[in-house]
Every structure is written in structure tokens, then in C-alpha cells.
Length: 505
Image (cartoon, rainbow, N blue to C red; front, side):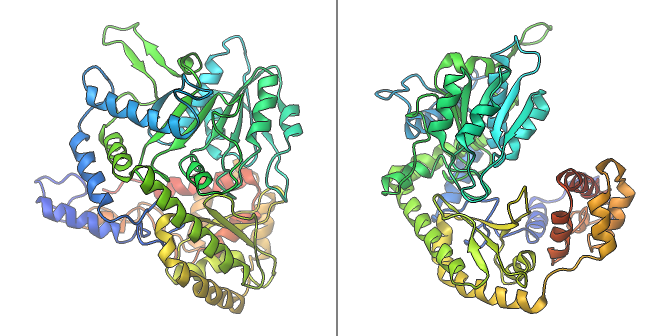
């Protein structure tokens, strides 16, 4: 090991071009963020020049600090513009039934949902045990918010056919201690829009706030409606909707991480803020969780919206709609596969009804062919499924996907389903989560081909060897997780991620 190459902090600095080359080498192991072959995590419009514009805008404001809007009015102006654009798109602003909408720019959808729960909780300081009602299909970030904020989580089951909650069940879940009822437009897993108007009505009747998680669909559903799609009412045009979240780093195609949290009026938003003056330094006043925030993501989002405009987003929505239709058709013609829900947004979700066609093996076969999908494990009577988040960049690739899916299905049938050893299946079926130790998880990981973290140490290329690597084939791992109860599944993954996230020396 040379001193120059030791880890992230060498004794002597490394030339800029070499550092960039190292980062590019690391990136070579990542999933492809562009090109329409990755159906999760990233959102690619396929618009030439947009990345360059966003990077330049990001650089202009990267060192601007969102802590104090009076010191950096440029950032305040861009934030207010983004909030205004989101509010107008989602049924608020002058001339609407929600003329007084206000909002905040956050670092992502999870932060927006945490703040929506915080505002609702802090608006009811009289409650010792505040509660949150959310459909089981609601994003896991609601559970994270409940955990962080010490709010009890009441989940409402979804119908196994419609994948939506029954409004009567939502109403029955509301208690005197309920501070917020949440619903999704659409729910991420299956792309299905909850009955927002009806849920908002029962929440309003109980005197409870109603939040619409439109992080995933808030920047697509309005354009799809303009294209003639039968999008149900879900925004501020619905009486009883008190807040909405929408991510600009999803279908507004801005770089990570920018989300907007909207409230119907300033009084509803007020408990979202945190203020503290009881110390000798500056008075802290924050509308979001972070204090110091880089202006880079906000400037990049502002540039993206300005450049694409309404006409650009309408065109991208049309491309995405066509891609969704084509992908759904590709699923329909493969024997043994069926759509879990008819697409009504930007998601294609399918499952297998053929015992000989293992869904997790199919995912591996698609990966081997350059198509990166997202497997979803079975839950509460819902089968395991494959999720495809569809973006505009997918449209030119649809013609290739159908043959690839058929070929992958043939290969998956030939390979046969994953067969877990009976003793391993029995173990995960009976093992209590608290019985898991890091050593046991490390042994399971090694036995399934997962490299433990910390195996590499120091030297040039340390980061390339990194803190662990997944095998090329994940079907056995997904099968193991699918067989485990939710609590054990969580603990297994928590311990495994802990193995991955270890320092390199």
C-alpha cells in the first residue's frame, strides 16, 4: 500500500483527473441510470442536454446554504417558485378551491412524509398517544415517520383484488387519538390510486387531517389526465385533503433529492416548523428536518422545470403512457404471467401463476439480459411480484423488452424454481428476530454468496473492492426472505446492511 493511495484521505492529494477516474471506475459497478433498462430507483426522461443543464445549475448553487433564506434570497425565490408550480399542478393557488396553499421544499419523499406526520402530531399537543392511519399499501416511510416521531401506526388492509383499502375500514380505524389519515396517489408497489375523495371525506367527518402521498404520482397523474386518462380526483380539488407530497426528483425528472410538501393553508403548515432560541447562538428556525442544506438540488430542479415546461412534461407523459401500455402487453402474452393490477399510472406490476415459473429466477434471467427490475416479496395474502417503474426513456426500449421477457421466462422454466433446504426453510419459519446475531447473519450471507463487509483494507482501489458485493444471481436470497415473516425479514436485512456498511482502511 502506498501513502498516496491510502483510502479516501491520502497523505498527499491526488490529481483531480485521477480522482474522477476512480469515481468513474466505481460507478461502473452500478445499475445503469440512463437508457431505459432500469425499472426502479432512478427517473430518466431521455431528454438530450437535460443532465448537462441540471449539473450546471447545481454547480451554480451547490455552496449556497438553505439555512438562512435572508442570506441567500436566490434560494428562497427558487423554492417559492417550485412550491407554486407544484401547488398549481395539484389543484391549488389563485382561482381554485384551495387558494391559500403553502409549501416547503424537502430533500425527498421520506422527509416530506415525516414532516406531514410531524405537523399533524404537533397540532395536537393534547394527545399523549397520537395515532396515524394508513393503508397497508402506503409507503414504508409512513412507518419510519411513526417510529421516529413516536406515533402509533394503524394499518388498514387492502383488498387482494383491487389492492385498495375499503373506505369503511379506514373510517373504522380512526380513533379520537388519530391525528392523520394517509392515502396514496398511487401506492408505489402496484401503481394503484387509493379512493382519495372517499378517504378524505371520512377523515374530515372525524375532524382529522388527510395527507395524500403523491410523491410517486403527483407529477404524472395531472398530465395523464390532460391526455384523457380517467384519473380519479386526488388533489386539493378534493375537500378534506389537507396536505400533499410530490417528488420533483421522480417524474419532474430533477436530480436527487427534491420533494415538495404542500399544505392547504399556512395554519396547517405551522406545526411543521421547528424553532429554538434558548441558547447563546443564532435562533434556529427550520421548515424541514435539515438545517444546513445545499442549494444545488433546488437550483437543478428549478432549471429542469423551466427548461421542460408544461409542453415538455405533457410530451414525456405521453411517451410514458405508451411505454406502460407496451410493457403490459408484453406481460400479457407470456404464459404463466399476469398483471397484478391493470396499469393506471406509470407502474407495471406482474406476478406468476405458474409454479414452474419462479418469479425470482425470472428476475435473475432478466438481469442477465440487461433488464433491471424490482422484485417484491409476498405480503398478507398478496403474491410476490415484479415491479416496473416506467419512465419516458423506456419508450424506445419497449420493442426489445417483449422478446427479452419471453426468452427469460423460457430460461427460468428450464432452470426450475429455487428449492431452499428444508432445514433452512424451517429455521426462517421459527427463528425469533431477536435471536439473530451479526455472526449468524454473516454465516448465512457467506453461505449464500454474499461477501461480508470489511474484507478489503486500504490501498489503491480499496473503494473498488468496497464493503461487500451481491452475487450475480439473487433468486435464492429473495426466496429466503420471502419465506421469512416480516419481523425476521427486517432483522435479517438490518444486520446484513450493517455488514455492508463498514469502513475501509
